[in-house]
Length: 394
Image (cartoon, rainbow, N blue to C red):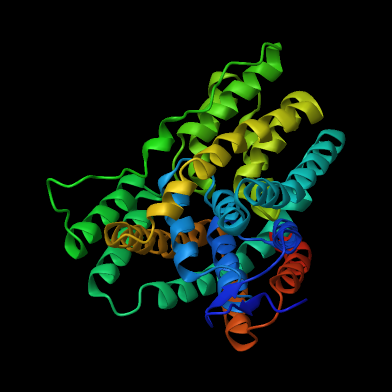
């Protein structure tokens, strides 16, 4: 791969990489990126900011802040924004598609296998090992984000700790915490001077995604419901699960409780965004086209909520007030990520074997910084396939 950096006539360093390089990266991340939004955000920082230098620290922070503030899946929105940074709408569109497509194809294949063979017992064995290893991966990602983004700022550390505590206690990410953190740092560092003009970066968010435009019966219901979920559910990853349960199990009775739990398990053991479970649910309800409509309806709103405000973030993002706001939101977001390590760990670490797997994973990643995560995930999956049946029948 060619060096993505060049030097202009003034001696300033500018980032240079092709659109297809970032598309290939997002395809690879969507194929091998286990761990849900927390780990995926960490991978993007490590690979695109630290290792390749394609994305600046400031652009990454802006993308993370925007993804936290807008409804929809965090990792997908961050991928869309990072594609937008240098290649605008084309980059945002292709990066988003490349990131989501691999996991969509996987859940469709798993949905077909689920319907054909009636159950996913072997998947539970896989997740037993993979889920534990993922905790170690997430913990390392949270550590790197914390040390790089917060530094020695006491206010940001206070926000980080408060956000982590709220996440652990509520087991969810609360958008008002991010907004409040942003406003607090803004008022502390760059208080507004009343009487001047005020630019709003949130105005584009008023363009809501239209629902109820499909009039085929079941596909119409699927499209409208999942578009609603993608439009109004804040928080990343598993935050959407309680909302989906109320609709697909309680309201429409499309799935049984067992099927819904299996759908969540599929999302957790496949790479890419956790919200891709909507594709699996859509497949169980109405086959391939149900999967396509459910996934598209879920991700189109998050795409719009990313690309519509993006020009305003790019234009006004360097103003002191906006920088302070973004720093506050970023500190809260990283705190939520750290808290999510504990929340997800409570679900995945169930005995001494899974605890050992999580600790060994973190230790291996600490010692061998260039070891690819897919190798660790594959080893953990094999351990799960061997050990889980023994423990179940013990």
